[in-house]
Structure formats: C-alpha cells, structure tokens
Image (tube, rainbow, N blue to C red; front, side):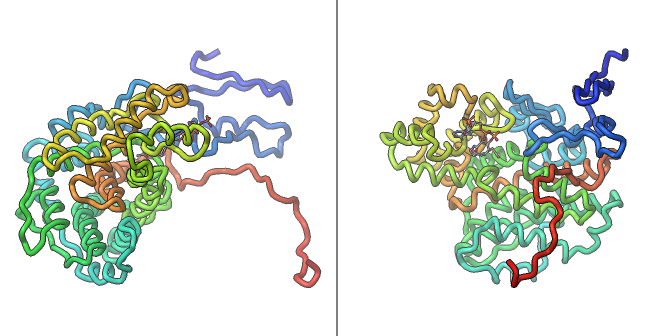
Length: 427
Ligand code: ACO
C-alpha cells in the first residue's frame, strides 16, 4: 500500500478506500467516491467557517500560529518592519521577490503617476452624509472605480492586471484621505507627487491651507503599521477577495468586497471596537470587573484572540515597540494604562490562558492611530490601506492557479421536504 495515503473504512457498507495525502491534506473531492448507493452524491466534508479546510495553495504568506511566526514570501515580518518601506513590501507581495534598486524606483514612479482620481469621485463623496462611516465610503468608492476603468474587466491579460494593481495601490491613499476630509467637512487636498507614498497620504489627510509640518517619526510609525497589515494569508477579507474575484469580476469590485469584509468588528473593525471598549472601561480600577463580565459571557475582550495565533501575535509585539516611539512624540495616550492592565490581567487569568487568547494586531494599533490624530471610525480605513498589497497579490495568485474555479461551497440541506404551494386565502 502506498505510504502517502489515508485508508478510510465506511462502516455503513464495510468498504475501504485509499485516498492520497499531499502536503498533509486530502482532497475533499476524493471523498465523493464514498457512497452507500450508486446514485448517491457521495461523501462531503462539513466545515462551517473553514476551520480545517485549505481553500488554496499559496506562496505568499506563511504563519505558524503556535510559534507566533509571520513571513511574507519567506522574509520574517520583524525584518521587513524594521528595514523595508511599504512600497517595497507591496512589490515583494505582488511580484514575489524583493525589488532591486532600479525596480523599486520604477515601481515607485509608476505608482506616483497614478495617484490622482477622476474628479467625479469627489462629487460622489460629496453625496455621502456628513456622518457617513469612512469604511462605507471607502468600499463604495473603490467599487465605483470599476465604472471609471471598464478596461479592468480584461482580467486575463497580465499587463492589464498589473495596471489595475498599480491603480489600486496608487489611488487608495487618495480615496482614504478624501473620506477623512469629507467626515471633517474639509476641502479635499489633491496628491502632491513630490512627496513619497506615506508623506503624500498624511499631507492629503492633515494639511490645512497647505500648512502641514511632517513628522518623520510618526510617518515611519504609520509605515510600519501598514507593513504589519500588508497580508495575513487566508483571512476573512482575503477569502472574500478571492471568492468574489473567482467569478472573474474586475479587481475593483473584488477588492471592495474585501473592504466590506474587513469592516466587520470581528475582523478589521476590531481596532475601533477596542477603543470603544477602553472608553467603556474608563479607568484602570474598573479592569477586574470588566474581565469578570467577559468571563461571565457578557461580551468579548476586543483585540484579543485569533483564529490562527494561539500565542502572542508577532504583529502585536512589534506594534508595542512602535507605540513607544509614537507616544514619545505625541505624549502618552491615557487609555494605554487601561490597555496594559487588561493585558496584564488577561495573560494571567485561567480563562484566557486556557483558551490561548493573546493580544492581536488590533489591541494596540488603535491607541497609536488615535495619538496620531485619526478618529476611531477611521482606524479600519488605515488597516485597509495596509492590506491592499496582500489582497492584490492573493487575487493574482488565485487567477493564475489552475486548481481554482468559481468559489461555490456545498451545503447540507436542512429545510422542508417538497410540499405543495398554499394559496394566500388558505394560510
Ligand atoms: N474574549 C473573550 N473570550 C474569547 C475571545 C475574546 N476576545 N475570543 C475567543 N474567546 C473564547 C470564546 O468565547 C470561546 O470560548 P468557549 O470555548 O468557552 O466557547 C473560545 O475562546 C474560542 O473562541 P472562538 O470564537 O471559537 O474562536 P474563533 O477562532 O472562532 O474566533 C476571533 C477568533 C473572532 C478573532 C475571536 O477571538 C474574537 O472574537 N476576538 C475579538 C475580536 C477581535 O479582536 N478580532 C480581531 C481579530 S484579528 C484581525 O482580524 C485583524
């Protein structure tokens, strides 16, 4: 018997089957041969929320959740966060290798060339209410870009895909900054292509009357945060981009689906929820009572826990370091004291220890964004800005993967048997 196989015995029939094992997985479709009768559909796996299903093969990001390891294309996140620029990481994720100096210069130049958006986009944004959530604006505008670039439908042409990737990376800071300005009732600031990627974004968000004094320490801190968010393999929003993109829709539509998924409080929206939680706790002395409430089922400790990391999230470790640099410039965020106390108690508490619940990327990032001057509801926009290269890299990989087809899960039907329609007057 071949060594790399799994033998399954169906006790309903007594029959045995050998199923190949590759990369520690079996193919779910190999189970379809397991039937009770010839006209059976065959055995399926039932895996709500994809707890144990690999939906693709991917060469982009490696995570070891038990050891707290995160690597992009093989490079440790710690080294990238310390030494690389965001656009360098975006190139690495999208192209697969670190750029040479020349490649990086040309990549930066191409992206800078595409930073402007059609002015109709501003009219569009003006149509949103003054209190529209910036994530709602972002996902609407990014989706709408597909109408400005109908050429993006040609997803089978590599040069065309490259152009749309560049457009999305280049226009994202502009759109994100416009959403910020709209929320504040401030006039839009257009890109200044003499500035670098991060400098341009910060200028478009904070400049008043052309007067914005750049703070290089805060800009580098923001850049590190974007690098830490750049990809995280098959998370909820990336899976949304892949699933929607698998219908061969244009990338603007697929990416806006990713932004929608990220908006949720169990995903990217958690950084916003952490700040709301810290506000609710109000004071360090209330932390033990809050922890007891969580343990009693009265809500979750936001910014804690992760589907994959069952140890300290390596990004959270790096973010704590960034926080020190930022608070040195801005003064301490008073809520940091509450956050540190929450972490201290939770890491010692049996409830959290037993369930392997550690701070995730969102636990401290919100405190930093707030110190930088971003309002709470804007935090997830910053996350989306950082995640764009990952979404684009995963979208491209999905399209080139010969194993992939339109994403279409199966179901176990639990509804009624066939029954005749009952006219309204007889119900
Ligand atoms: N606070 C309290 N208890 C928690 C928390 C939490 N933050 N997270 C999980 N648990 C408990 C659950 O109640 C469950 O307990 P039980 O076994 O007694 O029922 C157990 O830990 C396992 O939790 P699941 O919900 O099954 O874990 P899952 O992998 O499905 O959820 C998730 C992961 C969604 C991140 C969860 O930990 C959570 O809701 N965290 C808070 C929200 C958050 O911070 N999200 C950001 C994630 S990072 C990101 O997306 C960028």
